[in-house]
Image (tube, rainbow, N blue to C red; front, side):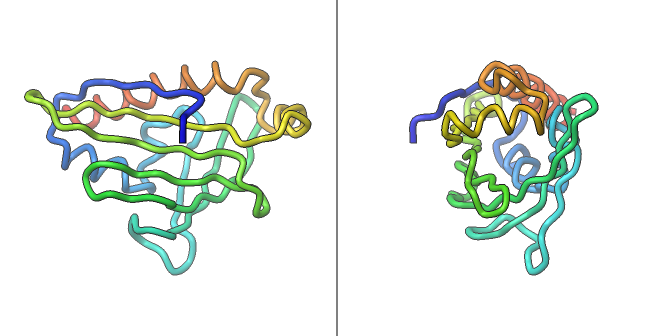
Length: 152
């Protein structure tokens, strides 16, 4: 997969600390400016292949709910999930962690799978006209918040 958008940040914390934070999806609301809450779906309580959760999202006055499923997980290195709405996968999101001498580099990435004809409708739901620009800004904010939490 070649992501549409990716953002990287050096975090001065052990890779294992960052991995634990990223894969605890119940903490997603601490870092994401859009997803304010994430809860494991029934039958799941930890990050593993196939695990699903519900994300509650907000952009200004707009709110919506999505489902997500972990599609790839490499312990300590790579965490990837698909987001769907009523069974339709509209985006893939993920994180890669690379250890460094001072902690790790985290790369957040996403690919938009919506066909052109679906973009206007999803813009009405989310209030986001330019999803790539919105996601880029959100990723910078997410990684800054993640760094602040993990470096504390």
